[in-house]
Length: 222
Image (cartoon, rainbow, N blue to C red; front, top):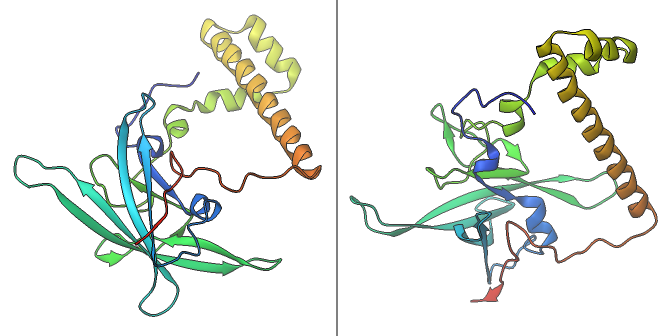
């Protein structure tokens, strides 16, 4: 367990994340201009949080552009509308052939187009336009709740750590218990990664039509 949340900044976990790697896995890239795709993000309760429709088109100069259509609900001052956004796509060559796709952030920061290259863009609950983490001033939940004192305890030699756990002050012993729990979790994660790596090396197949966002995109010719 870490500290309480110390800032009111939104976290990436509270936003809708648009991952270009999941678009590639789902077959949306490279796209067919005739195909209209959609994806929906849902709350843990199962209710819909946000739905976007998008189409992959050739850019004006070169490369690809994703045209995203957001449905903005009506407010007291504005009627319901469809908000459009164009997200440029960049590519880089892979070492063993093929290309890797990236988003270019389409938002304006400090009066200039951001255009930072990234795999994931985010839409906050208040600003439905997709942008990078810097443009939306987002942080991570783990950063907000992480306690660096636990890391300091984990760096101690085992003998010193056990001494703190046995003879330290009440606060030190509580931190040592939390550090022990964190060490156990890290060991479990490391073992799980090794297990997954062994399975992949044994030739296990990766599911190609995995869902992206929260559900599979529905492609239909228009």
